[in-house]
Length: 186
Image (cartoon, rainbow, N blue to C red):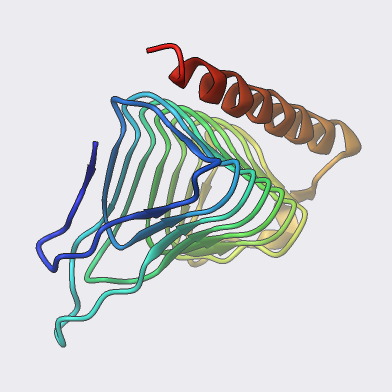
């Protein structure tokens, strides 16, 4: 469902993107080329700051927002998802937040008030809250990263983790093409 927010903003969606019919895209959202938005995902840009303004939620080209993901923002803060990035099933990305290019965010993970650098891998059920991650960091499953987390204890992304992330991007690019073909059948 594509809809306006209370400020009257409508999403801007590239015609090559695939948005599942059960997804909700609301307000000041920009979705770039070849993006996959899966079933029951919710992307909302509808809250304003004290001056009545809001920044957009931007999803970069060739990225995928998988089933049940929620992307939202507090008080109109920006949320940016880079290119070739995967936000896996049931994750929450809550602004202010930015996620770089070629990033993988695992199932049920939560990002809030942070920047995740290019090439990072955040595995399943992890939390990054109030702490920026430099490029190429690997956050193991169930890890909690907060403002006082010593990043020296966090490993760098391995070639195997990068290969997995790239495979997820390829699989979702195939889904975009396949579902776009099917749209013409119904």
